[in-house]
Amino acid sequence: MTTLNRSAPTLDACKRRRTALLALCLAGFVIQLDVTIVNVALPTIQHDLHAATGTLEWIISGYALGLAALIPSMGALGDRLGHRPVLLAGLVVFGLCSVGAALAPSSTVLTGARIGQGIGGAAILALTLAVLTDTYPPEQRGHAIGWWAATGGVGFGAGPIVGGLLLSVSGWSTIFWVNVPIVLVTIGLILLTVPGAAPPSDHRPLDIPGVVLASVGLASVTFALITASDVPWEPVRTLVPLIVGSLVFVAFVQWQRHAGEPLVPRAVRGNSVFISACAIYFLSYVAFSGTLYYVTLMFQNLLGWSALRTGLSWLLMNVPFLVAAQTAGKLSQRFTPRAIVTTGCAAGALGVTALSTWSPTTPFVVAGIGYLVAGIGFGLLVPGITHVAMHDVPGPVAGAASAMLNSSRQLGTAVGLALVGAIGAAATQHSWDTSRYGQTQTASGPIATGNLHGVPSQMQAAARNAFEIGYHVALWICIAGLLIAVLLSLHAFKQRTASTGTARAKAPSL
Image (cartoon, rainbow, N blue to C red; front, side, top):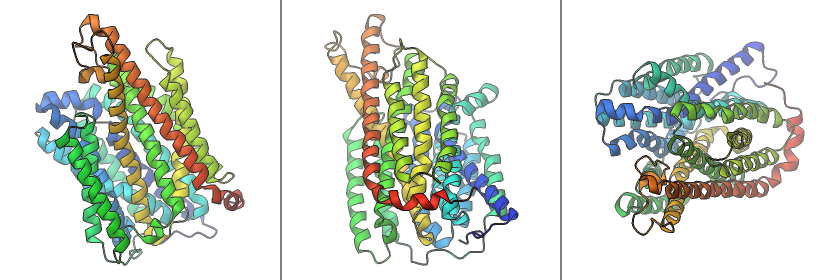
């Protein structure tokens, strides 16, 4: 892709860059919005479409599966066919499948449309960062990535709020119709502002065996982890696909070492800073998704909050996230990636620590402080880690690098929901087993998720205590993940400390 004029940019060039950034931010926003907006509509969808519980779960999970399985392949296609056309194709597929979801006459059709949304979303997630890298010179990317990360985070947090508001005035189909105007505006802005005449950046033949192995491995592992959140480690539905996916990943790694033109370019695979950034991204999203999952269970199930009220409480995290993400872009001109990322991980750990101490008898201000500090931490971390990961990636392999980075985030989200959920449920079960009722009745799924409506009144106190213990243990796991990320950041980015500060101090503003 041709980078816009990087030497003494004109006013028109600056406007074009900013408009292109707006389009890329909208693309990131709508993808993250659809991760959470559907949750609040599930009861209505179940009633209107007569959906079974298992099908209902896959209306959520099918989207995540399509995203995780195809991101690497879409990145490779973008490098070979051009970042812009593959990004536009992803937006078209996502928009059409949103229409299909809105018009779905049955839960089966809706699930298929959600998988299609994930496939289109995989191309969008894989290529937005690559197009941003094409559009902005290195010294200006920090601020641009800050905006991109902030709007994506806002989309994730806004899902329950937007969904709740739409459902209060209309039916469930509106949560899919809302995507259509966003997609149309995004496509129009990209056509106007992102150069389209550049040749493909990577002329290598596509590694078909690598594509198949990566897609099958990611799909199998993601399927197992998603299923484990509902049926903890059932042999057929969780352990078998997890083992198969792991074996396929081993075969993929071996193939990449010997393939003449591997799916993951050697320039990316050999970049230790990039690989460390992917690991930190993975750990941070294990913690982020696990924390939001359990905090949501605490508020909605145990305390009986509505989805809208819970979503509105996320504003205490979303607003500081947005502010901190923009601050991170400016701080990148003065401080090293090591300082920004490490501070973000540490602040995230502090925020989750505050949330881990919360219980129904604790003043909400404690949770508010946790939201605030965690929002600041993740607001610094996400653009910081994205900037350092993409900083030294050569243009011809930017699509593959962007895809790997986003795959680590999606896999972290799936692992966070499954692993943290399973550990929390196990802690709840252990606490219940040691109570006076543990010998006569097992801790059912509702107790593990804090939904105590069907629990006999004499067991309510024990069930509440068991869930609270599971909640605390789950959030301690999230804290541990962020602390490991702190140590990894201190070690992995050590060599960049002295070499980047001067350059950033002279970087021009956006």
